Length: 523
Image (cartoon, rainbow, N blue to C red):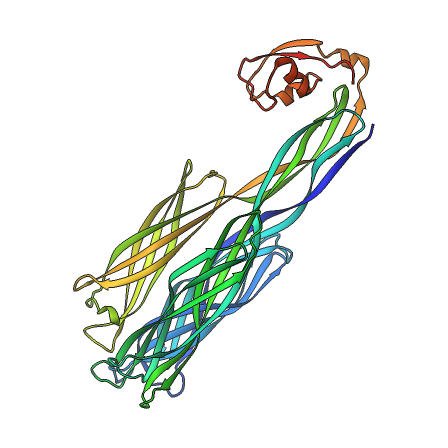
């Protein structure tokens, strides 16, 4: 007899490797010609720019640089502050056994710690500890059997394979620029020391054809002046922005997300109508990084038999990674940060940076508890010494419970904690109050297995084999029994059992339920 398997291709994703490493990079930064000798460093920060990521056999190679900004006090003049910039080349690799250039790579990085050491009045050694996270995902195609055709009566059992996987991803860049004017109540600019940009009041919306986003870029500028009473000033400006990404929403889409970040790319000081340097031409790039996830449901045949025939089935087994569920929560928080030198006026606070670090993830049923610490770093002008830049750092604990379906001990859980809506104000003489929110986003990935039919062999039963089946049976249902299993075991069909016992074909069997089962004698 002929048996034809109707097959369909289906794409799966398999997470092959993931690796978290720490790398230490350092370099000597030389004071540029024209700048005075260095006596003391007030402030150091860095920004990583990755230019190239190459996937090679068993490794991921990356290149870029760590750009640094240093504020320092010169020798023999403690009333002035100077700025200088430097860069540390980044060219390294992460070992990932089995990875190749056909695989999709998720590459993430962050600066975990920076430290300086003054070697002499013209040379500064900067050392940075960088955390690098790499995940490799391999796409693969499997053949699913969706139908079986035969010239003999055939019984088939169906199952549904559900897979949620990344569908569309990309980065849209929006240029935001403006001419910012220093208010009349503040002194004109002698030199810009540092500029910081932050997104506030962001709103993101999904439509059938695009992802819409808007918000405010808050630009903080720290600069030196010619005013002896206020040699260092901080001024803030707000620039609205709005953009969109053309991302068509298919009917299979179940999840999406979009993260907004901003970086300054250009800055130029210009004179106003009175000839004073009070205009700052600034250009920033807002990046909207989006990801969408589609759900594909495919009905497959996972078992067959032919009443009166001997059937041998050869199966293939494939494992795959699917996004099993997603959880999110938002918590508003208020925390105090003690400032030893005295709390500054809000207008003299240059930046507030919050860096969450997840330390523990605990699963209890359908609840995921995420805990860790937020490093709060506040850069401000010392109210007791108006030419001095100070930094206050405090570690703030967080603990949040998320309710997520489909949690299991063997699931891979990716948790992101993002600070939003940061505001700071003076609480008392030595304390600042930080109001902020933490957005928690948890992706739960599950490794699953799909078994597919590769080949079916059918042979006739001889008379003796056929007679071994009882003609009539009164059967008491046991745990795990189903109509399909009983029909296959007793050489009959589900339809016959349903008709004889007046059952619903989709009804579950009760423990001990009595069933009359007749053997089919003609096929």
